[in-house]
Amino acid sequence: MNRSDIRRLSPAQSARGMRTLATAMLAGMAAVFVAATRLDHLHPAWGFVRAFAEAGLVGGIADWFAVTALFRRPLGLPIPHTAIIPRNKDRIGDALASFLKDNFLTASVVARRMKNVDVAGAVGRFLATPGEGRLREGGSRLLADILEALDQEKLGGMVKAAVAERMRRIEIAPLLGQTLEAAITEERHVPLVDGIVTWAGRTLDANEDMIRAMVHQRAGWILKLAGLDARLADAIVDGLRKLTIDMALDPHHPLRAKAEEGLARLASGLRSDPELQARVEAWKNETIENEAVGDWLGGVWEKSRAGLLKGARDPDAALAGKFGEALRQLGETLQQEPRLKAAINQFARRATVGVVASYGDGIVTLVSDTVRAWDARTVSDRLEGAVGRDLQYIRINGTLVGGLVGLAIHSVEMLT
Image (cartoon, rainbow, N blue to C red):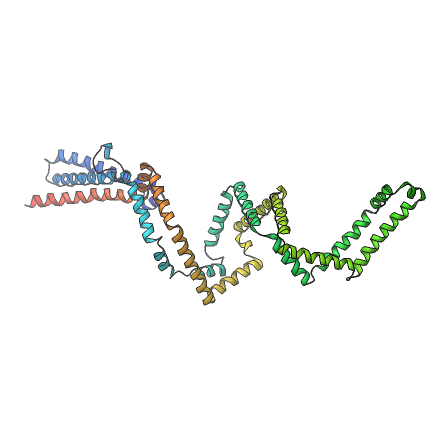
C-alpha cells in the first residue's frame, strides 16, 4: 500500500493500516533479535544486529504502551495512569467547551475578529457573479437536501400554525377601517358600489320568476280572483329594475349617497367602535379555525416549498430573467457603495456579537454535555480515529529510533 492509497482511505481505515504496520515492525524486531542472539557467536557483526533489534524492540514496546495507554488499558491490565482519555472524558469535554468559549464564543473576541470581515463585499461578489465557483451549487444542494430531509407534515403544520398565530395577532378591524376610509377619500369605492348595483340588477333578472311566485303566494284570494297579483308582481319587478338602472346611470342617486354614507360609518366604526371590532375579530378567528382555511394555508406552503426546491435544484433558472438581474445589480451596489457596505458590515457584526452573547453559553454547555453523554468507548474510538494514524507513526519512529540508539550504544561499547 503506497502513500496515495493511504490518503484515499478513511481516517479509521488509515489508522488500522498504520497500526498493522507498526505491529509488524515490532514483531519483525523480535524475530531479528532472536535470530541475532543465536548467531551472535558466529561473527561480531551479529552483535550490531542484535543490539539494533533489541533496542528497537524495547523502543517499539515502550511506544506501543504509551499510545495504547491513551485510549485503553494495555492487555486489559489495571495499570495505573492508563486509559487516560476514557477516564478523563468529562474533563476533556469541559476543556473543549472552555476553549471554544475563550477563543470563539466570547463577544469581545468575535467583535474584534469581525472588524476585518467584509460580509457585504462577500455577499456582493456572490450575487454579482453567482455562476463562479462551487459555492452556489453547494448551497443549492444543501438547501434542497434540507427541504427534502425535513418532516414535511410536521414542518407544514408548524408553518400553518405560525401563519395562523401571526394572523390572530393582527387587529384586522382598524386595518380594514383605514383601508376603507382611504378608498372613500380617493373615490376608489365607486367601482365597488357600481359592482354592487350591477350585481343587484343581474340578481333581479335571474330571480324574476321567483319574485312573481312569491307575490302570487302571498296575495289574497280577492287579488288572485281579479288577476291583480300578476299586475302587482309586474309593478314590483319593474320598479326594482328601474331603481337599479337609475342607480347605475346617476352617480348622485340618493341611494348611492346612502350607501356611501353607510360605508363611511362602517369605516369609522371599524376604527373606533369596540363592539364592532370585537365582532370582526371573532369572525376573523372563526375563519382562521375553518378547515378550508387550514387547507388553503397548507396549499400555499406546499407551493412555496415546491418553488424553493425547484430553484435549489436549478439555480441557473432561478437566477435567470429580471430576478437574477436584480440580484446582480444588488451585488454590484453592495461592492460599490461604501456607506451601504459599512452599514451592512456593522449590522452583521452587531448581529453576530448579539447571537454569541445570547447563545454562546448555551453552545458551550451543549458541547460539554454532549461529550459527557458519550460513553468512554465512543470518545476513545472518535479520538483514535482522528489522530490514530499519527500515533502509529510514533510507534514506527520509536522502533526505528530505538534501534539506531541501541546500535550507537553498542558501537561505543565496542570502541571502548
